[in-house]
Length: 319
Image 1: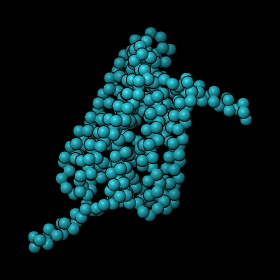
Image 2 (image 1 turned 45 degrees about the vertical axis):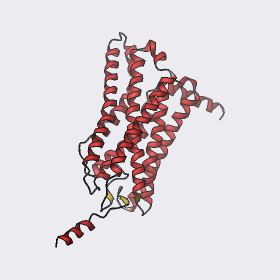
Image 3 (image 1 turned 30 degrees about the horizontal axis):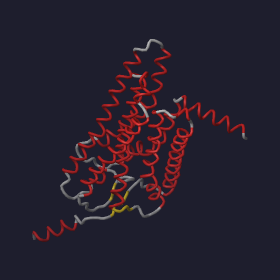
Image 4 (image 1 turned 90 degrees about the vertical axis):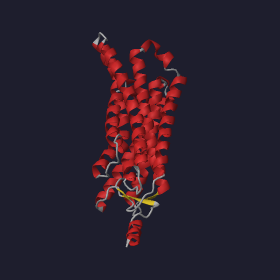
């Protein structure tokens, strides 16, 4: 009797090698609408961020540390959406919604790596704005090209290193049926939900590293903006205060959107249940944020608008 119970339990815990991404199940007509929507979102994100990178590289007026970090952010977001959206589009239009274990771990690695990199990069950009506002006379000396490259490399290396440690512990787990991931890509919590062995070690490592990569950059960002606000309040003229604040407003908007969603999703002590609400929140930072970030940075940026205006005026002359 005990042997039979053991065999039944074992059969329900058969290790799986493929996952089924549930995505957004709906009627065929809605699937077509979703496909068109995500395709447009993907094309827009790639186009917007590519244009920003090209503008920064081609125009001497934009050869400044702030725009160097912005070009890094734009490249990051091109990679960011390319990790998840193409697979999402493929799953919508095909019946085969499976992803292999190695494919899932690869997608998870690159997605979390890019997210961690963005955490650090946003903190670096906040530090850049702090130097620009609070130490304006020494800005060029401090934020020299060599130092900017080191800060950018630190962002990328720290993001990928921390994620490699996370994935090492997650990939050691055994995963059992049912192999359905209630998400549109391989994310940490939906994958952990399928583990059939003790995952306390992987959860603890993931939680600690999530706090490190989220809270330390957030602390740096918060301290930078506290110093910036203090410096702005000490400026005597209203025009001076407005000019100083305008250099930070776009970045502050991006930081608020990014950290509010990522802290909710990843700074949790235990695995979160996969739900449709989590999928909608994931859409916010995985699809929508990369679309709106270029608009946020460009609409409030005089240098970029001047560059666009000059380019358009030159184009009109040849038409």
